[in-house]
Length: 202
Image 1: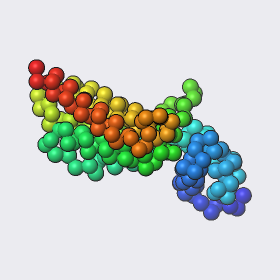
Image 2: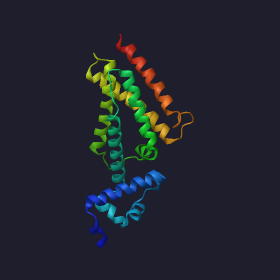
Image 3: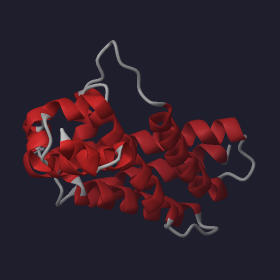
Image 4: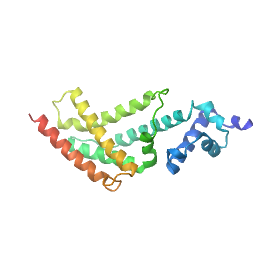
């Protein structure tokens, strides 16, 4: 019992998240359990449930943190007045980040939210921020496009790039792999931009 007084609740929360991230990065989601987390941090399994509702709460928190890191990564991509170059730079950065964090990235797809749980608002906020970054990158291509129309286009592009990242990070693709992901992404963005220019020129 004395051990629990060593760390504050916030410190324990961070210990649990750090241990969980380490487990997922080493062994994937299948290796994560309350018992394994407790073993790594030197507490009893019940400690986890004093801080988090359940293991799903831990996993969703890790996903929110991952998306926040993705947003920060893309915000560092310089955007200029050339929309096509912006799109290429953002896409390359997104794929690069996903592949550098393959195990954690797979967590976004391997973990299903139970019906009794709700996705935390920051999860959606980070997705909206990522779509907004892509919208800003696309904007020079269509200065006369409505904000609503450009937003829809940006979300479609983001979803497409996200799909390439997901397949490549899973390492289950035959042709779309970590080694070929950037090539496929470039093919996507080239055709996407070409189609947009044709549509917006009418």
